[in-house]
Length: 60
Image 1 (cartoon, rainbow, N blue to C red):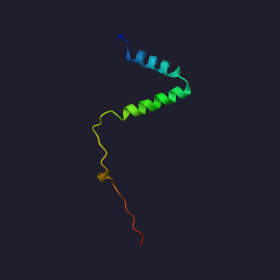
Image 2 (cartoon, rainbow, N blue to C red):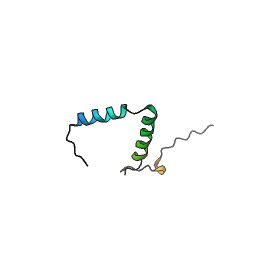
Image 3 (cartoon, rainbow, N blue to C red):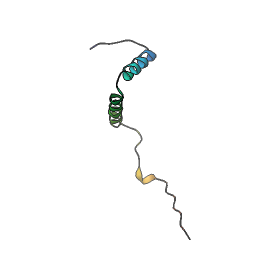
């Protein structure tokens, strides 16, 4: 395990460089993995399906 001290800008630049080194297919798979991980994060806001605003238009 290694610890690197760097600024946020340096870290972002390194992440971007590493990402751009991947092939297009690998980038796509990396994106899918990221989306899968994002769904595992706990969220404060929960979607309540009962609180939807519904507009009903009655035809005469």
